[in-house]
Image (cartoon, rainbow, N blue to C red):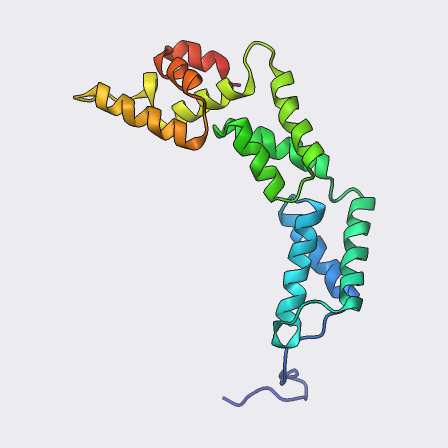
Length: 196
């Protein structure tokens, strides 16, 4: 079988990486945002990585390319495709349901590029949503249920040894000792009341 040529079959690409254009960056941003929710900072990093892959020698974006990246990010914010506050609220609620303590949620948001005030407001909002149970207790209850600790534990020969390992695991994740003991000693019904 012969290789494609420049005639009707199509053009065979010869040479280096494809050229980066403003249009390419817009299409790349929209494709990414169609699949993922993100922050301004993270979108900027994604676009910079795409530019590096296309630049010869994986060089950093040029001044012109950086300008295009900034323009695309600004457009996405202007049209409401990227909203750090909405992202922070949704991500913090999702992580809380997975059993992450508020301190770990705050660190995750900061890592994703959410500014400190917005991240703190999102975590504080978690505690305002349910006055009866603060966010740490709800997260601990979700963690215990997901890991099958405490009252959700399967019957074992030596529950005392298992309990010590459960306490250590929860402490490593970042839950305070008092809450760990309270949640592990609670009944299944009490913990299910804390969960949404």
